[in-house]
Length: 336
Image (cartoon, rainbow, N blue to C red; front, side, top):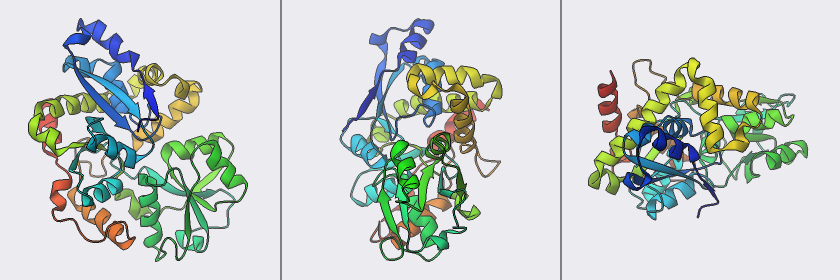
């Protein structure tokens, strides 16, 4: 299940600084869908700043391959919290996985349908008959690509082909060998490709910005049996989010990412630019909404798109059970 284990030494440092002992900490496992501290930035900042330690919890981060694996880990009890995309969550719930979206870490779409800068393709509709690459077979980027393409009247399999090519080097090679005409990329994927010399252009129509991306998810059983744990974890995440949004904290934030995932910060300038891009996706579209708020209306749009693309055979019995804003509202009220 777990492809990589990340030992968050920052958590130990934070506990030492606050005088807390590891034996006193409630152990919590957080599963992320890709090997990146920056993509999970509020979690790694909360570890580094000692916010979780102050709540009496020690968070261990596990990296798995895609949102589907995050949800499998949650369902199997191998993780307490995770960060999958909304599309995979809806399909998992259709199979009886009682997971609940509890904090929106990517309030704006964190994916884009990318082509090479000098490509002749100008709109998604121009990709008819072409191959679109993705990092994983069942990650959130796949559902996003299908959404964008179906918005132009094109369906996977009939009008274009989706192909799993991986990220980083393999995705770069797929572009350079003309194996793919476009790539459904996260902010991190796109930044990595640009760093590797593949200049990109985003074909995503503006209206898809409302399709928020990955967020914090836990099982409904955890909400029912240990709501205090959920509150503690999300309080740490929320404080990490607020810390990250203060430009004065940029260098400290990068230090926390380096403590949790050193190889990601080897090129500090690139990491800083990536942090800026990822952080920008966390700002709510509605300026009156707090960080973490989950817009109910967009769930219906996500569901409709999944049904149209064949990922769901029918609407869920209770779409309102997919998410809750109760913890976000409580935490936001506490911090006002």
